[in-house]
Length: 132
Image (cartoon, rainbow, N blue to C red):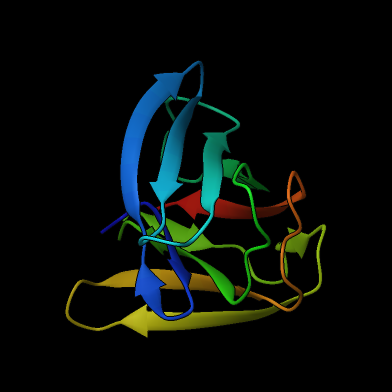
């Protein structure tokens, strides 16, 4: 659960994953009749020590054949990472929410994208975390 996740119209996407440099590429397959999203999450470093700050970037793009509405990107941070307050930025208009997961001891970051993604349209969110 501690990776970027996507839901469209309230349904979770199925993912295929590959790695590239400092990032992981997730291609999200929507339920029948839905479009495709490509999600890439990258970090500014592969290793870090307690006290270090790491910047994360999550890029997403509609690689399907129709617009995608009601897109939500969710990232579960491990308990070793502390979100740096007010560090998140988004290239698209989105509602940003932070939630603490008591059961897992992690922080959940959530971006609810306001407008549908047109074909070949994408965006990105960035945020920073401090290693505990």
